[in-house]
Length: 435
Image (cartoon, rainbow, N blue to C red; front, side):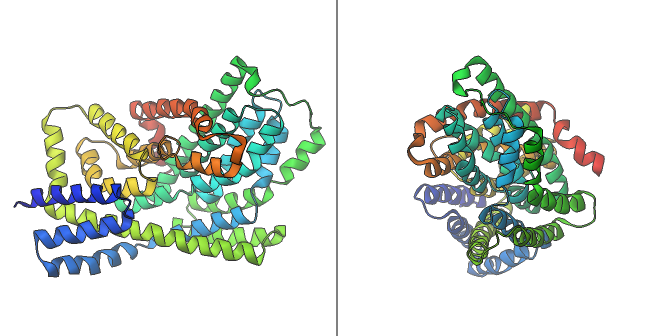
């Protein structure tokens, strides 16, 4: 049996294990170990199991993940981000769908200190959805907006997905953050435009808010945003200004969030314990999956299946744009069934060589990939953000109505993907300008 045949069989076994709900990290490690053993021998398989995880974990940039996670969990459990929605609500409530627009801005601000779509949706779901329902907003619009806006969490830095992608593809994490920031802003304003158009066409979706805040009340509301603004400015001014690395930025962010929460009077022992516990469990889960993906990369590289697949696809004479559209479709389908980290790490060993062969920038592809994976967070049957919102709002809305609400945002997201493919410089101009 040839090495390519062995690789094909074990890839089939991998997908079977995933369909059987075996944890994706365990599946990746088991299949990679078995494949190396079958292709070579026990010693090489066992040696890879000892060397590859160490080499991967030895990456200094990787240490920024628990730091950024801790920063996000501290902000979440100490409610540092509540002032964001309150300020946006006071300033924007007069616009068509103003509370929904405020939710988008609230999610964007929350994303800047967490990098987690799920945490973003959960937090804003508790704050924003009840407020919109109190003002007689459509449950479909209210829940759909927060579920979709939660996906901004993976685009606005810091993004755990981008850090992992940068390590595996050997791209600059700082430049990925810059490209993600641009696409995040485009997504924010596209969502706002969608909300305003829908409410303008159907005012019953979001009745006007009758109470008008005075200028003094608006200024006081802005004062509530100081905790998040201080953390964001402290972390990202230094990161993008070149004062410190992503790893140092994560450490400074974790330190700043703790100090700010303490100064704000919301840092309790319970909140600190929950933040530490969730940071450790999330980091451990991510590392197991990432180590499995590294082993799979070694297995596929030694088998040659990645190069063979790339050569086969390119031999059909398909244009780079058609190949990229095929990759988009694959990720949209995978996003419906797998969580983003698993879908990304499972496929990158095969997809990265293909992207390089077609001449696309790996930096650009990383941002497009994160955007594609986030669409999967709001599409059935998985739609993790949708289930998070359902768990938060209870009987306010059904799963069906939430999925109907996010449908319009998925259409906008697909338009943004098409725009990024047609004009790659949208992603690349800021990283290239900053250098």
